[in-house]
Length: 542
Image 1 (cartoon, rainbow, N blue to C red):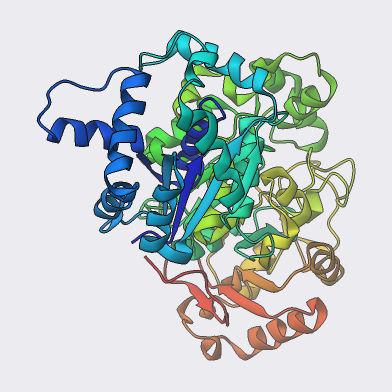
Image 2 (cartoon, helix red, strand yellow):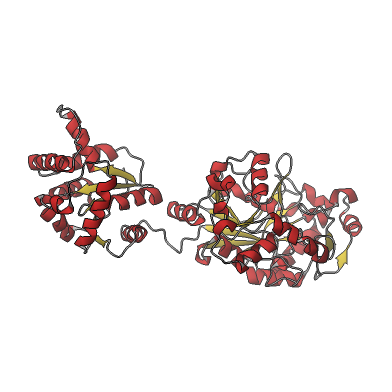
């Protein structure tokens, strides 16, 4: 049985059916049309034919109401919604008080009576003329003719005094009316419901966020990613997969919705290639219409940056700059304009609002790391966006009030891309030194950028950066990756107590400096190699 039943009343052309359709589209309501109920009753009466005209419907409805005072409607609605799985039913519409009283006796406190009207009769008449031009029902010759019906002229407007909610559609758009109605009947989700967990990097990118996101993904119904294709997140599928645009948990939770937010910068060819290579169902994917498109010219313009600051040269920064500088009114620079993406274009706001209403858990995945933030990184060796938790929330369109946990990822030895990519806080090392300390084979740690392909630079852990990133991102949890680089024996650790004593000592110090627990520890790149120390979860694993 439905949890909420909304009964609409109001004059013809006041906006009842528009409101009902909006509630169906936005909140998944099942709409019960009294016109269709009357048509069905007429067919079952054995009279033959259908009620095509407005006047015929009015006359037949009044005869039904006269027979039992309008109780027939409650009987028909109860039969329809008794076994329904819909949480919300909208009845469009009632015409007399007896119908409402019958429905209230059947559904009690579940029922909300919403009266839709307009204080401008001229506006109603104008709307009716527009309806006459395109209606599937034979309408009357004018609004004045419609009002000759006594029920329409007197009984329907009088229902306003009995309604739980009265909505004046004059001076309001349909979207405004829908919002006001949803708020009054309790459909809007609590703005303070903390349904979002955020995952960001605390260093210079390549912290292993993909591995952590892949592990966490089965606990979430919605996976959101922002940023651009200059960041590749590798995940431990049977044959390792690198996600440059899609959320890193896409292959870990095959029923999750996948969202690319409005602040993202995308290369359509990269997105489509990634979908094809992973065989991900495009029906799961929502790309915000306002995501920025990267052009071939953007990529060409970044060639100099590749040489000067070791940029990946994917055109992300140039596209972002073009978005800011070229505000000419030309929306062809946005994702909504690319026909190849049309079947996946869906406003992120709609997806998130639906998720909030349903109480779904959301994982927001940032890209790169705080050390590359255009505001908080080592300028000019930075990326073109703010990579902090606040930055990715803004790009996704998610309120900070929605955030429950913020997981900041650090690797045991931070890296930067090869070449003149900028300074690192810790003393720079080489890979031979890492191999010597850890006991790992040198060939097994020959790290190269997942997008650039260049050998990465590596340095000692930066404790000052740890504290700064924990502060700026509001870390509730720390994830540490590449524990095997501390000691190769950590590869075989599946519990915290199985880590080497030096590793445990290091992690405890990380907690003291950051002020947050080390909740997730990656011991190598595989599905099994995450030590999970959290005292929180998303939903039950699927």
